[in-house]
Length: 226
Ligand code: ADP
Ligand code: MG
Image 1 (cartoon, rainbow, N blue to C red):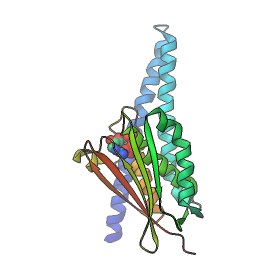
Image 2 (cartoon, helix red, strand yellow):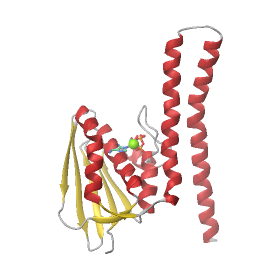
Image 3 (cartoon, rainbow, N blue to C red):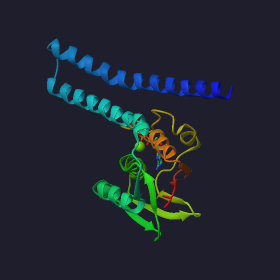
Image 4 (cartoon, rainbow, N blue to C red):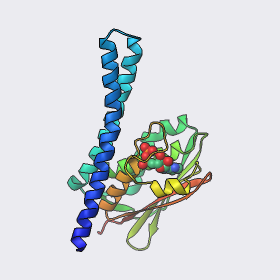
């Protein structure tokens, strides 16, 4: 009965996800279809319609590329990597975006052994998600602190501490549900996928958030066994 329960649960998550995907992709497709019909009938401003169609197609692309990450954990390629190097590379990648949004990224990396066993690209995707979310949570700018510290003899903790809008009880309760977003252009997939990837690395994600004060995302991962 335990197995049956697990299967039922899996089915409902898959069903929930499928319904979400269908809904999220049908909307832009309906819009694109409408504009094609309008253009065909020779009515209206064509140029504007093309711009909208391109942005709707880009939205579908964004959803699909995030969803593909969900399929990949099975094919994860684990290698020994220094988490500090990995984070530094991701921060470099997002530097321009941070500067443009008046966000200062401060790193507090504890010296010492910080090697883990991971799929580099997947883990980078997770960190990109959390950093982007932090930047987006600070529309008037602010500071994002990224801490790396040892957690006991064989665990590492990575914290992303922002001074952003924080999350209400309602947002916290719904976080991680596929397609749940409070953003106009959000996909609402980042959190769910990041959590799956971390769990696939035998890790955990902890969220602490205070509405209007900020959010801390803590990722705990096992250290590489030498
Ligand atoms: P998206 O970023 O596309 O909205 P996510 O799954 O990454 O999707 O996040 C879901 C929601 O969780 C966001 O829309 C936002 O409301 C909330 N959220 C995530 N990270 C933060 C953060 N650092 N501060 C405040 N709210 C956040
Ligand atoms: Mg996000």
